[in-house]
Image (tube, rainbow, N blue to C red; front, side, top):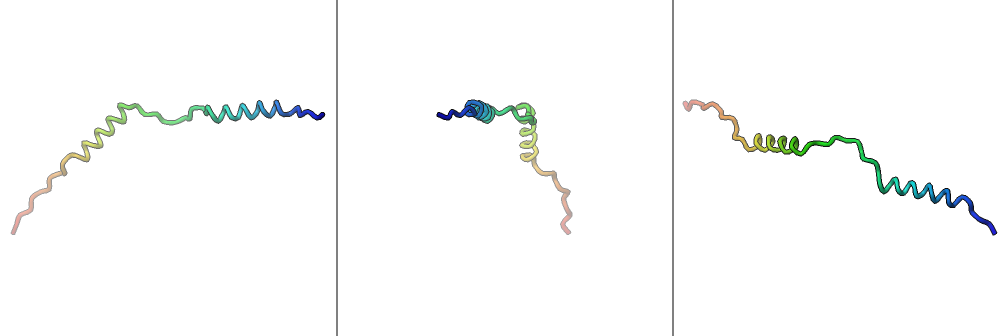
Length: 61
């Protein structure tokens, strides 16, 4: 009878790879504070809502 002695090693390697895929490490990135995002959104909204700059009146001839 032939026994396969490589199966436990391959199973352990496969299990480690699956665990790595299921629980990936945190990605390095830029995380913004909620207050900063809220302030920027409020500023953008105020700029969009504000009335346009008045233009000088022209004389009618």
